[in-house]
Picture (cartoon, helix red, strand yellow):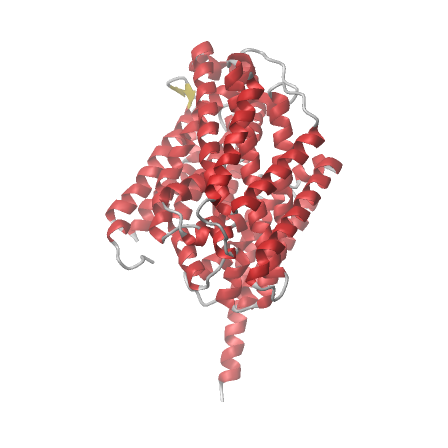
Length: 66
Length: 462
């Protein structure tokens, strides 16, 4: 269950759930509009979430996880 | 100079396709379409990435953000990004089901799990129908790309040649050719994008580029745009991996863990997009007049890069279109010979598929030349229709007890509703109509399933 929250829940909350907030900020991060910077950051964060799922759960599972 | 480089890379891709064939002299239908489930993490990664980032990446996306700003880019990037967690969790399950039923195509999976010829036919026919605009998009995108690079090509000749090339690669080694050519395409496309983005940042600076762009397009989203973005991201991230060719790509993997590992890396591939965004805004900063928004990226290429790199970009764009075209053909061929035609023996399926592929390519070419705009407006329909497979695929992947009749009813109603809503075009306040249809799909499926279960109980009572 934690596996699903980590790998699926977090990315969806970050990209979709927090989108209204991110899309309302008319500021710039290193010259880049906030909403763009937000999505770009989640490219890396999503990979990270999936990698955590892999390392913490699936890599060692001998039975396929549900 | 540019054309020499271009031809060089295309020749290299042909060489790679031939290399893919080496050592697999006679390919069975399982080897031809799903590489006998032998691909490791790297090949699955390159193949999947190769077919995800189609000509839309270099033509449609830059055009969209140039014309409409980041509000357009957000949903485009969002749904692709979130598809990867979905793929991480359901991909291995789909793979296992594929192995269990020795499936090659998506309808094979439905037939195997539900033991229903009717469902197999529905999935195959609707899959074929909704995939039609996708192939044509590659042709028109290809013409737009080369035109944007300033090359005047005869569109008919270009389209015929690319169709011929796609068929040649497929005929040589099937999906193995796709995988090898994908490696070259991925390298070329990412190089082209990163180099162009860096060139723009160097010449104009990142900050000034975005500031200039924000004079033309807003950086914040209103409620309507937000509703559209959120509902579209939700909807399309689900549909992403249930299309016929995506499922077939999963089947090439060696194991469920191969798929997991490839999905972990996929979001990082998207780090090419910041460079693409910067490059696409170049035309705004430098006030370059564009023939169409689709030329936004190429404006930067043409103005900033030396001739050899122009050839590289052209090769990358061409291979993008070609690869997706190959993926569609490799999905359509077996769907016709395995799922539509009854009882064609496996020894004849490869040859039969090639005939089906030729017919599909000819049909696509005819439609591209005759009705170029019609098909492009129907592109949205592809996702509206294909995503309706999602409940069925979930039922198969997780072994849920749902009757074939329930799945089929939901599926048909979802797709018919999508077609209807598409043409009626009601005001949904920005809500993605496909998502609405998917909700109806699930409700109908649940209702019919409940009814089937109840009637079973009723009949079982003494």
